[in-house]
Every structure is written in structure tokens, then in C-alpha cells.
Length: 185
Image (cartoon, one colour):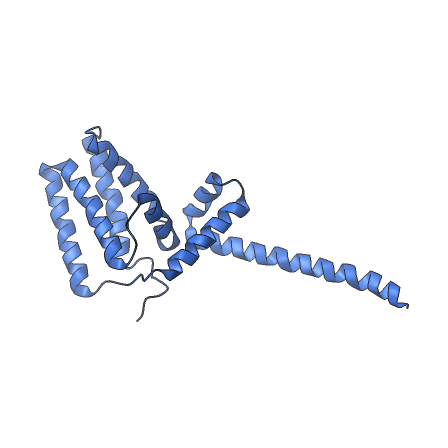
């Protein structure tokens, strides 16, 4: 068999194997992002120009998150936050709008205590999405109701719902539900 014939056979085989390897890598990366981000994966894909652009965005979030110093809370701090949440819940009976605003502030304070930057709401969503993508929709819903209540446009039922939504993220952050990759035993 001549060298030219051998190359004509080997080169296409190498190209096909390389394409299969690239496709498998892309599939595994996509699956890993879906598992990590949960519903936030589809939300990001829906809001992006392409699936590839969305996956780049999610990878960028992961890289930024990896640079953050996310840490579990010491027991004493966790107990203080639990007491603070109980106070906010009790406040709801007499002052539901104030309680929702306080719940928002408490969740933000808890994020900061864990090591999340708390400057902008949009950045909070991106940072939280890496470890808390499954409860992020709760945070969005609660925040939206909190904004309504600022203009006194939220019903008592909506305010109650906001408290339930805030509680979902609060519990996950308080008890390290996301299990930070940087946490130590």
C-alpha cells in the first residue's frame, strides 16, 4: 500500500475521531452545566443569543464564583441568623410589608456573611446561581414582591408568599445547602 493511499485512509479516520472527541467533550460540559445550574441553565439559554453564548456565560460565572471566599457559618452566627429570622416572621403579623423588607435585608446580610458580594441584585443572582440555582427562582419571586411592596402594591397573600420564597434561599444559605466547593471539613 502506498504512502498516499495510507494517508488517504488515516487522515479521515483521525479527523472523525477528533470530531467525536470534541462532540463528547461538549456534551459532557453541557451536562455538567445543566446539573450544576439546574433551572438556571435553561433560563440563561433562553435569555442568550445562542446555547454556546449561554454556556460561556455560565462558565464565566463559575470562574468568578471560584475566586470568591464562600464559607460556611460558625454555629454561633448561624444561631443568631435563625433568631433574626424568627423575629422577622413574628413581625409579619403586625407589619407584613416591613417584615418582607427586613427578610430581604436579612437574606442579603446572610449572603455577605457567607462571602457573596452584595453590591448589585443582578450580580447577586449570577453569583448565587453557581451553587444555589435550584432556589434562585424563589429569590427572584421574593425580590419582585418586595419591589411591589415598596410602592404598597402587594397584597397580603403576595407578601406571605415572599416570606416563603425568602425562607427557601435563607435556609439553603444558612445551612450551607449549596455545599461550597471551598468549604473545609
